[in-house]
Image (cartoon, rainbow, N blue to C red):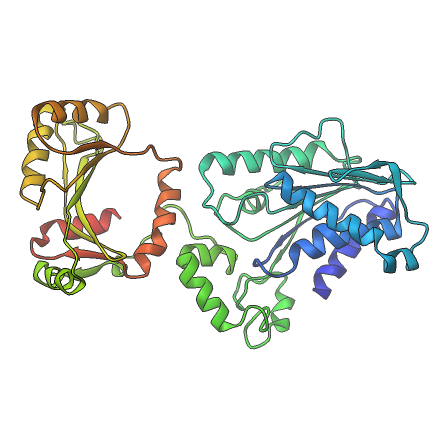
Length: 410
């Protein structure tokens, strides 16, 4: 905390003296490390203590979060203790809203959010605090929107291109998140402070490695037990980003081979009998419906849920046109436990609708058009990864020919 405050104070002092900025500031630090308290709530107030003509723009992924921090800063200014020490630092009565307020010496604090309007406003200090929602896996569209807003804020909202400073503070969520977006730029001056929860080569600057106690950034709030709990809750991918500040590449490694467990059908039936539950086999289809092997396969997967675990009985991938696949689908489901309680879910893209209508008309199978996905494939995979990693997905080994291919595709 002392180090972060010292670095922020250097920024504030250079702005106060209207000296040329040395670099923009990127801070990567785990959640629960008081980053918003320090950067978005107390630092802006401290800037006004040394120079209440400074103008600031603060932004987050949501307007309510930005306003929350602005209000907490204003609460500090209004507190009795602050008034005792800094009686001359006052907010203008006619410019005092939650999202924007000014000092009597023309200092200004404006709170906005990703995609929010700040046309015509400029600032000496621009702060981005969590430009993506850390509780949700970012979609490609959300990444692009956040990165575009960071570029807009950083390049067009400065009062003076030489003096103004952009500060971004966040935990890593994706290799192409706003932090990664800035780190990939070769034409900007950027000081990177990176503080993972555990001591690692990612710590920057390297002299901060000596500050870790027992290999931990914060042995009180982020001790080994707490970090182990976070790993279970987030999965290894989410944990690597938010607490290790090292999001793994999207091209591979999201799902590990040894996460899948194996079970025989007899063992599964014994489990079901002991739990006094009935196995109901369900099916899901992701269709390309083409015979061209240069395109994706049409895939059909058979699974059942028992308790909170998923049991995959068989997966089939084929290159077939619609009429042939309808026959294949019927053979597949009827040979893999389909009964009147079963359902067949089909992805709701244009190619999937004809097979639903045709099979409803020509068979007695329970065909259901599934809900449309709201995230890209990588985001959905990452969202599913903790479920798989926690040992909740079993592959049934009675007919094992499909298993290796399926696991490698995953």
